[in-house]
Length: 322
Image (tube, rainbow, N blue to C red):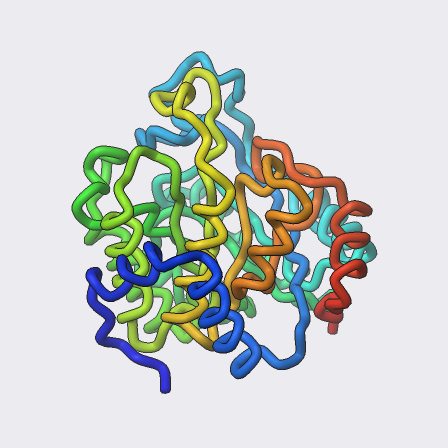
Protein backbone atom coordinates (compact mmCIF):
# COMPACT_ATOMS: atom_id res chain seq x y z
CA UNK A 1 0.00 0.00 0.00
CA UNK A 2 1.14 3.52 -0.78
CA UNK A 3 1.79 5.39 2.45
CA UNK A 4 1.32 9.09 3.14
CA UNK A 5 2.69 9.16 6.69
CA UNK A 6 6.43 8.83 6.18
CA UNK A 7 8.61 10.50 8.79
CA UNK A 8 11.92 12.18 8.12
CA UNK A 9 13.60 9.76 10.52
CA UNK A 10 12.25 6.73 8.64
CA UNK A 11 13.53 8.03 5.33
CA UNK A 12 16.87 9.04 6.82
CA UNK A 13 17.19 5.45 8.02
CA UNK A 14 16.57 4.27 4.46
CA UNK A 15 19.18 6.63 3.04
CA UNK A 16 21.77 5.43 5.56
CA UNK A 17 21.17 1.69 5.12
CA UNK A 18 23.99 -0.52 3.88
CA UNK A 19 23.86 -0.03 0.12
CA UNK A 20 23.06 -3.60 -0.87
CA UNK A 21 20.22 -3.81 1.64
CA UNK A 22 18.79 -0.55 0.34
CA UNK A 23 19.10 -1.69 -3.29
CA UNK A 24 17.49 -5.04 -2.53
CA UNK A 25 14.49 -3.38 -0.89
CA UNK A 26 14.12 -0.70 -3.57
CA UNK A 27 14.38 -3.14 -6.45
CA UNK A 28 11.74 -5.40 -4.91
CA UNK A 29 9.35 -2.43 -4.71
CA UNK A 30 10.27 -1.43 -8.24
CA UNK A 31 9.54 -4.88 -9.67
CA UNK A 32 6.22 -5.07 -7.84
CA UNK A 33 4.94 -1.69 -9.01
CA UNK A 34 6.81 -1.06 -12.30
CA UNK A 35 6.72 -4.53 -13.93
CA UNK A 36 6.99 -3.33 -17.53
CA UNK A 37 10.70 -2.51 -17.10
CA UNK A 38 10.42 0.56 -19.33
CA UNK A 39 12.38 3.79 -19.24
CA UNK A 40 10.72 6.97 -20.43
CA UNK A 41 12.72 9.38 -22.55
CA UNK A 42 11.77 12.97 -21.81
CA UNK A 43 13.19 15.83 -23.85
CA UNK A 44 13.66 19.27 -22.28
CA UNK A 45 13.79 22.61 -24.07
CA UNK A 46 14.34 26.11 -22.70
CA UNK A 47 11.64 28.15 -24.40
CA UNK A 48 12.59 31.38 -22.61
CA UNK A 49 16.13 31.66 -21.29
CA UNK A 50 17.82 33.93 -18.73
CA UNK A 51 16.83 37.03 -16.82
CA UNK A 52 14.87 35.25 -14.08
CA UNK A 53 14.21 37.53 -11.07
CA UNK A 54 14.56 34.64 -8.59
CA UNK A 55 17.85 34.19 -6.72
CA UNK A 56 18.13 30.37 -6.69
CA UNK A 57 21.81 29.89 -5.83
CA UNK A 58 22.26 26.98 -8.24
CA UNK A 59 20.77 28.60 -11.33
CA UNK A 60 22.76 30.24 -14.14
CA UNK A 61 19.55 31.84 -15.45
CA UNK A 62 19.10 34.07 -12.42
CA UNK A 63 19.36 37.80 -13.15
CA UNK A 64 21.14 38.15 -9.79
CA UNK A 65 24.26 36.41 -11.10
CA UNK A 66 25.90 38.34 -13.92
CA UNK A 67 28.93 36.12 -14.60
CA UNK A 68 27.30 32.85 -15.65
CA UNK A 69 27.51 33.49 -19.39
CA UNK A 70 23.76 33.00 -19.87
CA UNK A 71 22.21 35.83 -21.86
CA UNK A 72 18.59 36.88 -21.53
CA UNK A 73 16.56 35.71 -24.52
CA UNK A 74 12.91 36.23 -25.50
CA UNK A 75 10.25 33.54 -25.63
CA UNK A 76 10.76 31.24 -28.61
CA UNK A 77 8.13 31.17 -31.33
CA UNK A 78 5.49 28.44 -31.37
CA UNK A 79 6.82 27.13 -34.69
CA UNK A 80 10.38 26.89 -33.39
CA UNK A 81 9.29 24.96 -30.30
CA UNK A 82 7.07 22.55 -32.24
CA UNK A 83 9.89 21.80 -34.69
CA UNK A 84 12.06 20.85 -31.70
CA UNK A 85 9.24 18.73 -30.33
CA UNK A 86 8.87 16.88 -33.61
CA UNK A 87 12.59 16.17 -33.65
CA UNK A 88 12.46 14.90 -30.07
CA UNK A 89 9.61 12.56 -30.98
CA UNK A 90 11.50 11.27 -34.00
CA UNK A 91 14.42 10.48 -31.68
CA UNK A 92 12.19 8.46 -29.35
CA UNK A 93 11.06 10.91 -26.67
CA UNK A 94 7.52 10.37 -25.39
CA UNK A 95 7.42 13.46 -23.16
CA UNK A 96 8.38 16.98 -24.23
CA UNK A 97 9.15 19.41 -21.42
CA UNK A 98 9.29 23.18 -21.88
CA UNK A 99 10.93 25.52 -19.37
CA UNK A 100 10.64 29.30 -19.15
CA UNK A 101 12.76 31.44 -16.82
CA UNK A 102 9.89 33.33 -15.22
CA UNK A 103 9.11 33.88 -11.56
CA UNK A 104 5.58 33.33 -12.80
CA UNK A 105 4.02 33.64 -16.25
CA UNK A 106 3.30 37.30 -17.05
CA UNK A 107 -0.32 38.41 -17.23
CA UNK A 108 -2.44 41.51 -17.30
CA UNK A 109 -1.11 43.27 -20.38
CA UNK A 110 -1.61 42.52 -24.06
CA UNK A 111 2.01 41.44 -24.50
CA UNK A 112 1.99 39.30 -21.36
CA UNK A 113 -1.26 37.59 -22.26
CA UNK A 114 0.04 36.94 -25.77
CA UNK A 115 3.10 35.21 -24.30
CA UNK A 116 0.98 32.90 -22.19
CA UNK A 117 -1.25 32.17 -25.17
CA UNK A 118 1.86 31.16 -27.10
CA UNK A 119 2.74 28.68 -24.36
CA UNK A 120 -0.79 27.27 -24.55
CA UNK A 121 -0.37 26.81 -28.31
CA UNK A 122 2.92 25.02 -27.72
CA UNK A 123 1.19 22.63 -25.32
CA UNK A 124 -1.62 21.97 -27.79
CA UNK A 125 0.86 21.32 -30.58
CA UNK A 126 2.92 18.84 -28.54
CA UNK A 127 -0.20 16.96 -27.51
CA UNK A 128 -1.38 16.78 -31.12
CA UNK A 129 1.88 14.97 -31.91
CA UNK A 130 0.91 12.25 -29.45
CA UNK A 131 3.50 13.15 -26.84
CA UNK A 132 3.04 14.03 -23.21
CA UNK A 133 3.47 17.77 -22.62
CA UNK A 134 5.10 19.20 -19.50
CA UNK A 135 5.93 22.80 -18.68
CA UNK A 136 7.81 24.55 -15.89
CA UNK A 137 6.98 28.25 -15.80
CA UNK A 138 7.53 29.17 -12.16
CA UNK A 139 4.61 29.90 -9.88
CA UNK A 140 1.14 29.75 -11.42
CA UNK A 141 -2.29 30.70 -10.11
CA UNK A 142 -5.52 28.70 -10.37
CA UNK A 143 -6.65 30.44 -13.56
CA UNK A 144 -3.37 29.76 -15.34
CA UNK A 145 -3.42 26.13 -14.20
CA UNK A 146 -6.94 25.71 -15.55
CA UNK A 147 -5.97 27.20 -18.92
CA UNK A 148 -3.02 24.82 -19.16
CA UNK A 149 -5.32 21.91 -18.37
CA UNK A 150 -7.72 23.00 -21.12
CA UNK A 151 -4.82 23.16 -23.57
CA UNK A 152 -4.11 19.51 -22.81
CA UNK A 153 -1.10 19.80 -20.48
CA UNK A 154 -0.04 16.43 -19.13
CA UNK A 155 2.14 17.55 -16.24
CA UNK A 156 3.47 20.66 -14.53
CA UNK A 157 6.99 20.64 -13.11
CA UNK A 158 7.66 22.66 -9.97
CA UNK A 159 10.46 21.25 -7.84
CA UNK A 160 10.74 21.67 -4.07
CA UNK A 161 14.53 21.75 -4.49
CA UNK A 162 15.32 20.83 -0.87
CA UNK A 163 13.85 20.51 2.61
CA UNK A 164 11.63 23.17 4.19
CA UNK A 165 14.38 23.82 6.75
CA UNK A 166 17.21 24.34 4.23
CA UNK A 167 15.19 26.15 1.57
CA UNK A 168 15.97 29.70 2.73
CA UNK A 169 19.70 28.94 2.42
CA UNK A 170 19.18 28.35 -1.32
CA UNK A 171 16.37 30.75 -2.30
CA UNK A 172 15.18 33.97 -0.65
CA UNK A 173 12.90 35.46 -3.30
CA UNK A 174 10.03 33.08 -2.61
CA UNK A 175 8.97 30.75 0.19
CA UNK A 176 8.50 27.03 0.49
CA UNK A 177 4.79 27.67 0.87
CA UNK A 178 4.82 29.49 -2.49
CA UNK A 179 6.09 26.23 -4.00
CA UNK A 180 3.39 24.19 -2.30
CA UNK A 181 0.67 26.63 -3.37
CA UNK A 182 1.62 26.23 -7.03
CA UNK A 183 1.57 22.45 -6.70
CA UNK A 184 -1.86 22.70 -5.09
CA UNK A 185 -3.13 24.86 -7.98
CA UNK A 186 -1.80 22.34 -10.49
CA UNK A 187 -3.42 19.42 -8.69
CA UNK A 188 -6.73 21.28 -8.33
CA UNK A 189 -6.82 21.84 -12.10
CA UNK A 190 -6.43 18.10 -12.71
CA UNK A 191 -2.91 18.29 -14.15
CA UNK A 192 -0.28 15.72 -13.14
CA UNK A 193 2.43 16.89 -10.77
CA UNK A 194 6.13 16.56 -11.58
CA UNK A 195 8.01 17.55 -8.45
CA UNK A 196 11.42 16.62 -7.09
CA UNK A 197 14.60 18.23 -5.89
CA UNK A 198 18.35 18.68 -6.05
CA UNK A 199 21.07 17.11 -3.93
CA UNK A 200 24.64 18.29 -3.57
CA UNK A 201 23.87 21.88 -2.53
CA UNK A 202 25.42 21.57 0.91
CA UNK A 203 22.34 20.04 2.50
CA UNK A 204 22.45 17.25 5.10
CA UNK A 205 21.09 13.72 4.74
CA UNK A 206 18.30 14.84 7.07
CA UNK A 207 17.39 17.58 4.56
CA UNK A 208 17.24 15.01 1.77
CA UNK A 209 15.01 12.81 3.89
CA UNK A 210 12.76 15.73 4.81
CA UNK A 211 12.30 16.67 1.16
CA UNK A 212 11.34 13.10 0.25
CA UNK A 213 8.92 13.04 3.19
CA UNK A 214 7.12 16.14 1.88
CA UNK A 215 6.82 14.53 -1.56
CA UNK A 216 5.78 11.08 -0.35
CA UNK A 217 3.15 12.50 2.01
CA UNK A 218 1.37 14.45 -0.74
CA UNK A 219 -2.06 13.01 -1.52
CA UNK A 220 -1.87 11.82 -4.21
CA UNK A 221 1.87 11.46 -4.56
CA UNK A 222 3.49 13.22 -7.56
CA UNK A 223 3.18 11.23 -10.77
CA UNK A 224 6.85 11.92 -11.43
CA UNK A 225 9.76 12.89 -9.19
CA UNK A 226 12.97 14.24 -10.76
CA UNK A 227 16.08 13.47 -8.73
CA UNK A 228 18.76 16.01 -9.67
CA UNK A 229 22.39 16.31 -8.66
CA UNK A 230 23.73 19.84 -8.61
CA UNK A 231 25.60 20.84 -11.74
CA UNK A 232 27.91 23.58 -10.38
CA UNK A 233 27.98 26.53 -12.79
CA UNK A 234 30.69 29.16 -12.56
CA UNK A 235 29.25 32.53 -11.60
CA UNK A 236 26.56 31.15 -9.30
CA UNK A 237 26.99 31.05 -5.50
CA UNK A 238 27.20 27.24 -5.70
CA UNK A 239 29.63 27.28 -8.61
CA UNK A 240 32.52 25.90 -6.56
CA UNK A 241 30.66 23.25 -4.58
CA UNK A 242 32.29 19.84 -4.70
CA UNK A 243 30.31 17.34 -6.76
CA UNK A 244 28.62 14.60 -4.79
CA UNK A 245 29.53 10.93 -4.86
CA UNK A 246 27.47 9.03 -7.43
CA UNK A 247 26.24 6.59 -4.79
CA UNK A 248 24.41 9.45 -3.06
CA UNK A 249 22.27 9.77 -6.18
CA UNK A 250 21.70 5.99 -6.22
CA UNK A 251 20.53 6.16 -2.60
CA UNK A 252 18.10 8.99 -3.41
CA UNK A 253 16.60 7.05 -6.32
CA UNK A 254 16.18 4.02 -4.07
CA UNK A 255 14.53 5.96 -1.25
CA UNK A 256 12.22 7.72 -3.71
CA UNK A 257 11.19 4.37 -5.15
CA UNK A 258 10.49 2.81 -1.75
CA UNK A 259 8.45 5.76 -0.51
CA UNK A 260 6.66 6.42 -3.82
CA UNK A 261 6.14 3.00 -5.44
CA UNK A 262 3.95 4.08 -8.36
CA UNK A 263 5.77 7.31 -9.21
CA UNK A 264 8.02 7.64 -12.23
CA UNK A 265 11.42 8.49 -10.76
CA UNK A 266 13.35 10.71 -13.16
CA UNK A 267 17.14 10.56 -13.14
CA UNK A 268 17.71 14.15 -14.17
CA UNK A 269 20.43 16.80 -13.94
CA UNK A 270 23.93 15.64 -13.08
CA UNK A 271 23.68 12.45 -15.10
CA UNK A 272 26.45 13.61 -17.43
CA UNK A 273 28.90 13.21 -14.56
CA UNK A 274 27.86 9.61 -13.89
CA UNK A 275 29.54 6.55 -15.35
CA UNK A 276 27.35 4.16 -17.29
CA UNK A 277 27.56 1.74 -14.37
CA UNK A 278 26.42 4.38 -11.85
CA UNK A 279 23.43 5.19 -14.03
CA UNK A 280 22.57 1.50 -14.25
CA UNK A 281 22.64 1.30 -10.45
CA UNK A 282 20.14 4.17 -10.38
CA UNK A 283 17.86 2.21 -12.73
CA UNK A 284 18.20 -0.88 -10.55
CA UNK A 285 17.30 1.28 -7.54
CA UNK A 286 14.08 2.42 -9.18
CA UNK A 287 14.74 5.25 -11.63
CA UNK A 288 12.70 4.72 -14.79
CA UNK A 289 12.96 7.97 -16.71
CA UNK A 290 15.77 10.16 -18.02
CA UNK A 291 16.00 13.52 -19.70
CA UNK A 292 17.05 12.70 -23.22
CA UNK A 293 18.92 15.05 -25.50
CA UNK A 294 22.29 16.73 -25.30
CA UNK A 295 21.19 19.84 -23.40
CA UNK A 296 19.16 20.43 -20.22
CA UNK A 297 17.98 24.05 -20.39
CA UNK A 298 21.46 25.60 -20.23
CA UNK A 299 23.68 22.71 -19.09
CA UNK A 300 25.05 19.69 -20.95
CA UNK A 301 23.53 16.22 -21.01
CA UNK A 302 24.42 12.75 -22.25
CA UNK A 303 24.64 11.79 -25.91
CA UNK A 304 21.41 10.31 -27.21
CA UNK A 305 22.95 7.29 -28.91
CA UNK A 306 24.90 6.46 -25.75
CA UNK A 307 21.65 6.53 -23.79
CA UNK A 308 19.90 4.19 -26.21
CA UNK A 309 22.86 1.82 -26.17
CA UNK A 310 22.86 1.80 -22.36
CA UNK A 311 19.14 1.02 -22.18
CA UNK A 312 19.57 -1.79 -24.70
CA UNK A 313 22.57 -3.17 -22.80
CA UNK A 314 20.57 -3.70 -19.61
CA UNK A 315 17.63 -5.26 -21.44
CA UNK A 316 15.15 -2.52 -20.60
CA UNK A 317 12.81 -1.04 -23.16
CA UNK A 318 12.06 2.53 -24.11
CA UNK A 319 8.54 3.69 -23.27
CA UNK A 320 6.85 4.01 -26.64
CA UNK A 321 5.58 7.22 -28.16
CA UNK A 322 1.80 7.18 -28.52
